[in-house]
Image (cartoon, rainbow, N blue to C red):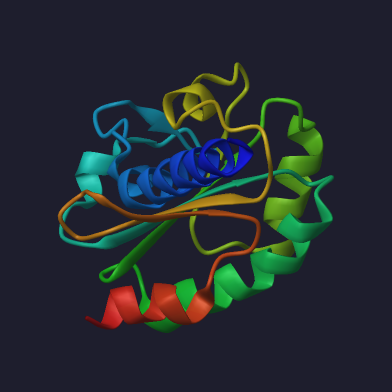
Length: 161
């Protein structure tokens, strides 16, 4: 009697896990939501249709974020803004002065947004862990969500395809 219950539990777990991986990339993106850069420039994800977009949720206090930022900078510089648009969204719990200092010191070559009220993180599915990255295709649809450092080779393949 215990074996059928165990088998049913394992089967249900496999179905749930499979559904997560298959349906997880079908997240609706806030394509029409306006964001504002540290310089005051307003834009929407839809403005970048036709380009690969990487939305990076980060914080200056996040060691993983600080580790990945030079790699994101390198990829952005390699492919330019005509092929890739990186959007670095600083979390609401981060300190604006720390964000601005980091941005100026490292000369990040992409849009940096401060999500002061947490609204952008909420619209992307209530992001709480950093780094979290969304790789979006030229068609404006989600290719992949990464929690933790992204697969840089996968990002480059998406840009080059």
